[in-house]
Each structure stands twice: as structure tokens, then as C-alpha cells.
Length: 193
Image (cartoon, rainbow, N blue to C red; front, side, top):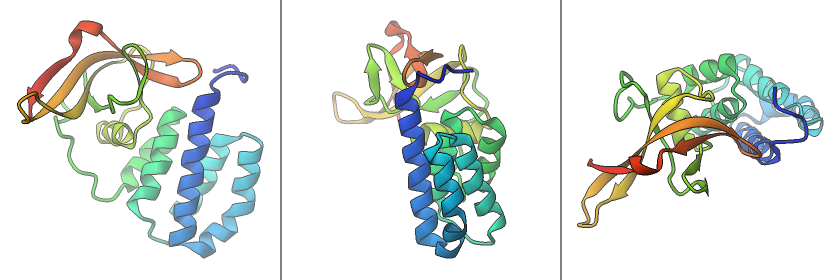
């Protein structure tokens, strides 16, 4: 259990993702959004982020409306960042047209998209991107501390050809950002796309 006074950046990020999902619901299903707004806002105001997510998820599942993929991506990323496995897997099932994993799901350690521009400190990267959440959804797992990963990101080689930037990483707790990827410094490498 995380201490209440820490992880302010993580909470801020999760709250922003929940608000983005709420705004997408308002655009796609205003009547449904109107029924959920008061309860959702109350949970947010009391920093009950899991309950706020549950409110949106239950409404979206029971509301009889079609919500755009971006709603599910934002909600799924919030669930992943909160490490809410049941909710995350329910959301993963609802992401329309979830493309196959670029590298396949059979690798050990698994390949997970990481925005290498999301550098927090030397060799420490955020796991807060939608691409990261989509790969975990494809794998049907959540990130967890001490988990080994191969991170990848699209890159361009020195000769201008498309490549993959790869790095071996270990998932670790980081205050105030929550789970992050700690890359082994000598593991950065390129592979043709």
C-alpha cells in the first residue's frame, strides 16, 4: 500500500486521465455522462480515484452506448497506473480494434512500448503512455515491481532508416511517479524495423 502523502505526480496524472475519459464520455454520450457526473466528481474531490474510475467503467458498461476507443484508452491507462487488475482487464476487452502486439506476446521478458522521451532521471522512464497501456492490455497483464521488460520505441537510425530502440528494464516503485522502468545502462540497442 502506498503512503497517502506520496505519489502526488502519479495521482495528478491519474486524475487527468479520468477527467479526459469523462470529457470523452460527455462528448459521445451526454445523457449517460449527466447521470454519472455528480458521483464521479464527488469521488475525484475526495481523491477516491479507484471509485471514480469504477463509476465511469460501470456507467460505460451498463449505459448501452458506444464510446470511442480513446475513452477506453484513457480509462485503461488510469487503471494500469493504479494497478487495478480486474478493471484493467475488463477495459482491455472493450478496446475496439486492438491491433496485435508488434513483437508478439510470447516473449519472455515481454516487449512493452515506452516513450523514451519520458525520461524521469538517468535510465528511468515513465510507464504512463497509452502505448504502454495498450501493450499491457495485449499481454493481459499489469506492470508490477521487479518485473523484467524489454522496452521499445520507434526510432530513426543514423542513416535515416526506421529502427526500433530497445532496452532491458526492470519495473520499480518510484516516488512520486509510481511504477517506472529502470533501464540497464548497457542494454540500449537498435534493431531494424
